[in-house]
Amino acid sequence: MLVGDSVAMVALGYDSTLPLTLEEALHHSESGAAGCATGLGGGGHAVGSYHGDLNEALRNAIRFVKEAAREAVKIEGGERRLELISRLTEAEIPVHGPALG
Image 1: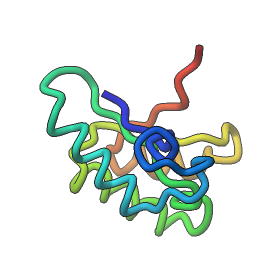
Image 2: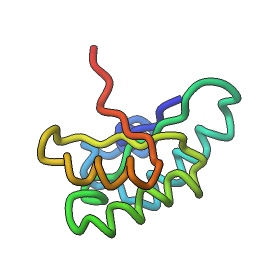
Image 3: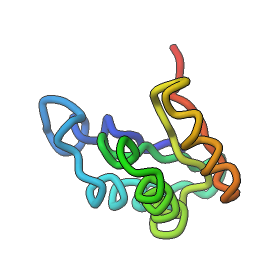
Image 4: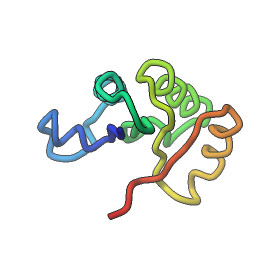
């Protein structure tokens, strides 16, 4: 089960995904993991949680894996995120992109 940043609009009533905080994303992702016994659990970061310092982005991804019981983290941005994706996979954190369709 993927709990992404769209939870900002679907569950929290925001006009866009931009106001979603890291703490809100962790909370809802953890709730989704608790209710899903099968399948890959992925989680979308809040906007800004992986856009700055690589060390901070890695810490945020580790929080998703540990606190929200995610098996992978969603990273958007394509080639601009190659260094981050490399750091995450070196830390044995699976990465996936946004769903298509």
